[in-house]
Length: 208
Image (tube, rainbow, N blue to C red; front, side):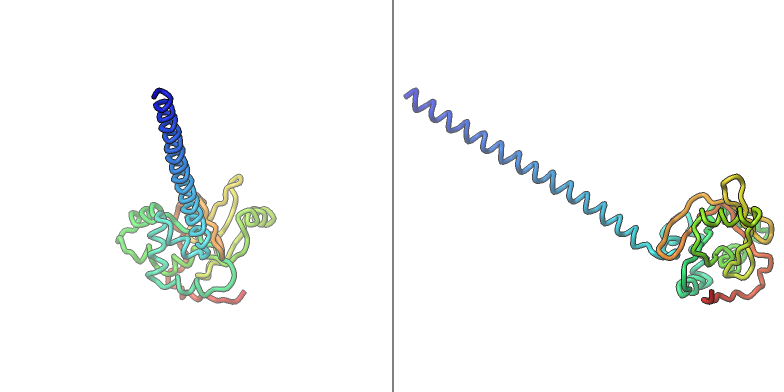
């Protein structure tokens, strides 16, 4: 009788071990699936970021640049930029920079903020990165003038190793961040740059 009882208890013990092992395997499987799901989500986010291959998409995806993106859409510069060939650089002022312009505008007119002249004055055609631009500035006696698609020049200079952009009205801006896109760069700047002649017709050309 005792032998039968011991045998029964032994079988129960083995069954308990087997049941516990199955549960552990299930938990391990769930853990692996969770990790794989997290990895897949991360890869999807990476792919989504990699698909941001257009400078306009890069501007519109950044909430800090929503005012500038509104200006691009309001004056149809976006359509013109998307048809341009080659790479470009957009110097995009932050919402805070636009807020400062709005406060300094006596009439509070939105034309001073979303005018096509002003928006297109922040865009140049160039395949150079920031390091190449800085080297070119040094080779040009510390001042480089680059034509914008608006038609007037931006003056680029260096303060130490920091790039300084100066508009036609004398307002200067600095780069605070950058976004790499498939067809160019977006450099976020802390000031709005204004052209000298706001009545000038904007002609965007695809010619080199």
